[in-house]
Image (tube, rainbow, N blue to C red; front, top):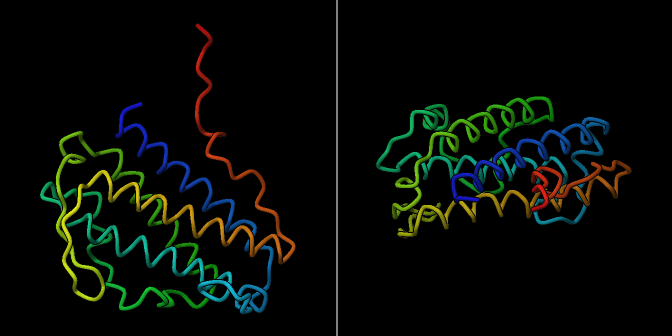
Length: 180
């Protein structure tokens, strides 16, 4: 599997899992979603907001890539989050709509990447203004890993609240190779 194929798989996994997580979260009332559960970002809603913030921050960085991928235009129009704890939406329905738009953007963007795009070194600044230069492909690994990490937290919080998101294994999306 090439890097491009791998990132395509990760983008599909991201969308699949976000749908499952939001479906489970939709079974809870607003109070249960906002309840402080002692997680890094407090509540289920707080953690889902952080995931969206993280994606926006990284997608805005990826939008500075020399190829200027048109698929990232919708993200260019979103205001830069000021904090990793910023609440982008007050309720699940509004956040879910943002999540759908982000996932569609990620799928389209990843589908349009070339091997040359992945070989670039991307220069970006973090939220404190510290500048770094890192390989694009490695940054994308981090991007997808960050999503998986926090979705794992949300899945646990949902389970503790009585909602099971079901199977979460990436393996489900990996095609079975035919026997030689």
